[in-house]
Amino acid sequence: MGGNLSLDPKFDEKRIRLKEIIKERGIIIKDVTLSSNKKSHFYYDIKSIVSDPEGATLIGELMLTEIQRIEPKTRAVGGLELGAIAIATTIVCSSYPLESKNSVSGFFVRKSVKTYGLEKRIEGIVQDPVVVVDDVITTGNSVLEAVTALRSQRINTVNIMCVIDRQSNENLLIENNLKFYSLFKHSEFADYINSKVESNIK
Image (cartoon, rainbow, N blue to C red; front, side, top):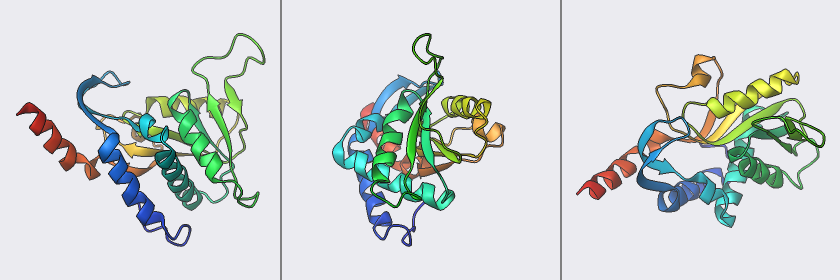
């Protein structure tokens, strides 16, 4: 993505800065098992980035700009616990104090329904149309779970947005004809990651 100057004159500048931060602190070169149970030589640690003031601000502002481009009438953002909560919160905070028609509310989808209290599966404020967000999409399983929960509540206008698309060959969103958007794609970091992996092997 990029070039959304009409919505945010500093969009490209912010995106370049966030990319630098991800390279500096958000890419861990280590043999790991992903949530999809796939093995990888690296890990995108976006949760650390969104826990940092500068990283959180950049992610919130950039994703809000992209969401407004994708669907200007978006009223709520959220996704499956736990990964989507911080991302959604940064976007909600970035939308304030915009005009009420441009601000967004937040929600999150529980992995299972509470057995106490209001016994909700979806917490927060859900207003159609929504954007389901996540930090990294590999197979898209957690996003698909959130979309399914929303549709069960008759929330049908659902877009999907993540920070990084790992560009996996096995993506449930693509298999289910669900279009999704990302701030970055793995291919933008691939050369950097490969050089780090090779240096570790040496």
